[in-house]
Length: 187
Image (cartoon, rainbow, N blue to C red; front, side, top):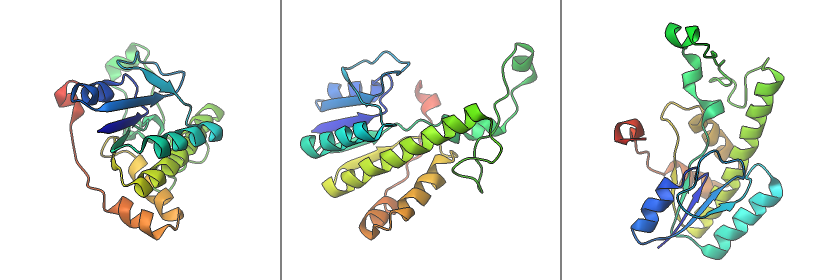
């Protein structure tokens, strides 16, 4: 069994799959803040040329399963909550919401720094969609990880519909949702 993990971070999932006997390929960008637990391919999925390389990797390896640990920072609904008074006293910033139901691609009036983050994340989500289309064509098992209330889910649904690829749209919307509380399990 062959497994590819995009946005692998620490590579804990890849390590678990390797320990289960799978051949693994972990992929993350060069600025990954985690120390990988498995050898990791450096591919920046914000760059068109490197998405082409990742797509070629999928087509060459023909994995049985692919996992996308898409970053959730700009899609986080936690940004809608106030930071506790205690953390505020300690100097913690109060992050502003960057997206909402009417502005999945970014709220109007974002600061230049926040707009840059949202635009880069949107590019990465579009590129991940390109890889998902390839996974669909290769008939891979696919998993996508993000918090249940994340704005990523409606954003991905919108991007999928925009492909106008009926087979891909039907495949995507037939994927099963599994709720898993990672915090309860040591994450």
